[in-house]
Length: 272
Image 1: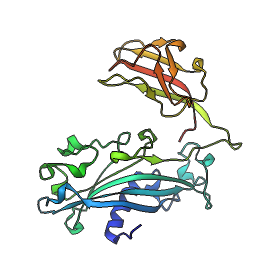
Image 2: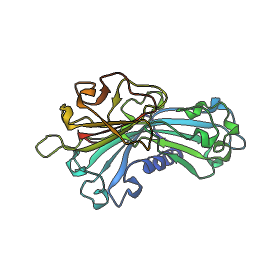
Image 3: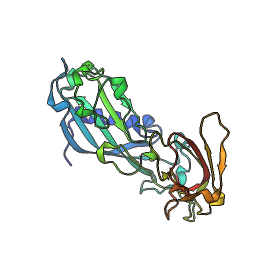
Image 4: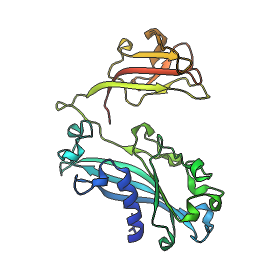
C-alpha cells in the first residue's frame, strides 16, 4: 500500500468516520477506523476542469475499524458483546468507500456531501443532475451538475449488510462479524422481509439473513396486489427455500409477480 498525503488522508478519515457505526464519537466510545487501504486514485470526469474548482479525482478503497463491546455508547448495537473479538477485545468490521474530491483541495469549499448507499447503490444522481450511475466519476456532464462546480467533496461508504458481498462495479459493501451464543451456536430471532420485485418478475428473492430452519411451517408468506388490499396467506406448499442455506425463497408456481407485494416473516439466524 502507498502512503497517503496528509490532506487526502484527512478527507478519507472524515468520510469513513461518518460511515462507520459509532465512529462519529470515535474517542469517547472507543470506536475508530484503524486502517485505510486505497486501491485506486484516478482522474474523475475524464480529467476535465470543473469551473474554477479544476479537476476532480476518484479515490476508492476499503477502511477497517473496530468498536469496544463494553463501552456503553455501543450498547445500541444488537449482540455486539457476542461478536468475535480481536486481541484488544474489540469487534472488527470493514467497508468500501468511494470519494470524489478536487485534486487541489485549496479550491474545495470545505463541505462534504455524504450519502449512505441504498443496498450498495448510489442514489444522488437526480439531486445532483448528473449521470454516471454507481460510478459518478464517469459522469458526462460534470460542469452541469450541482456539487462539483461548487467545490464539494462527495463520499459514499458501505454500511448496510443488504448490499451483499460483491463490490464489483462500485457496489459499496460492508463486512460485519456474525455474533454467536457463548457455546458457538447461532443466535436466532424474528425477521421480516417486504418484497416488491418492481417492473421485472423474479424467480427467487434473497433474504437479508438465512432462515434458522428449513421447516416451511415456521415461515409465513403473504401476497397482495395493492397496498390497501388485505394480505392473503400463501400456503407452505406454495413457496420453498431456493437453496440449501435457506438464504432465498421462491414460489413453487412460478416467478413473483411484478409490482405485487409479498411479505415474509420467519426466524432468522446469523445476523450481522
